[in-house]
Image (cartoon, rainbow, N blue to C red; front, top):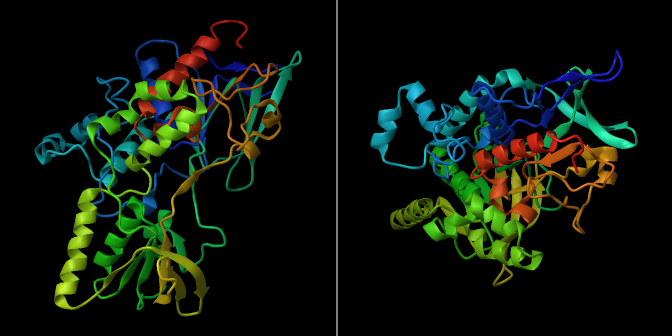
Length: 438
């Protein structure tokens, strides 16, 4: 496929594919495109638009010693092309650390190291990406009564807008940090997504300590980091469970992340999809690495032996009030079993309360009227991750992320990035190899 000019002297040029967002999902897609070109095959002409000024992936949680939760073999390429020179092992070889990593005898690299790998990949495909571009609108382009293309309107930091026309759009809007209803982020109340950034910008040294709300991996990591970084201050862990629950990393459970599991999930009736999600939520949601749980418990016990209680666990507890003052935060927590309320006087509260998929409907604009959504406002999707539309839409609208309801739990994780990229490219090429794509 090639990029061709649109009709008329002032029309935008037409790309085969425009990607909205450039996190790991669309980065994996860009690599797959690059490899197809390098191999001498035909590949769609593509452009990716990213609102950030450079590649970045959860920088606010790149904590010291924090490791990845999935094997390095599930990188951006290996499940699709084990011989790829975009693999994590190729990155290690390029950095001169391959033998050191082998001697480390682990499948789980440091998160900072994996971020370096992602950045290394992004730099190598940088010609396909335009950073500092916030996509503000998708506008249908009609020809003979059908929507054949989409005008992707992006705005830079200076407010200047540019339009790119595409036969296919691949949306990768990512996840949005979630705060409980009624909670607003402020200088003293943060989501864990921004932990390191907020700590770096502290105007003064904390004196009262911290509270961390949440029971998942990010919450436990935040508790661990704050407890180590501020060795004289209390750190309160607040969660409604009796204790941190361990993640299920056993081999049979992990098969839920295999590409074959996507087929099985997609073809299942919705009632059974909901059951499967319930069965295997403990592979990813509100669960913690067992080694981290053990380490936190060891510290709690050691402090008890020494007669101090700096790491304080408030289990079976919920937050009922949050009052900011000029000097700190009064966080009122309630014991769910007794009803007793306690005010925690802290400098800052960190909410490690997860993420939600971005709602694509506002971005779709007028195109949303031609798309199919379920009763919960989630888009209906074909197996190839293409949004289901009415017959007037001839172009392709693809979605990476936010597809858990149709494609299973792996759709929000790195596990199937490589395989999904190939499936989307195959779909685009197959649909445009015939004159009338459905």
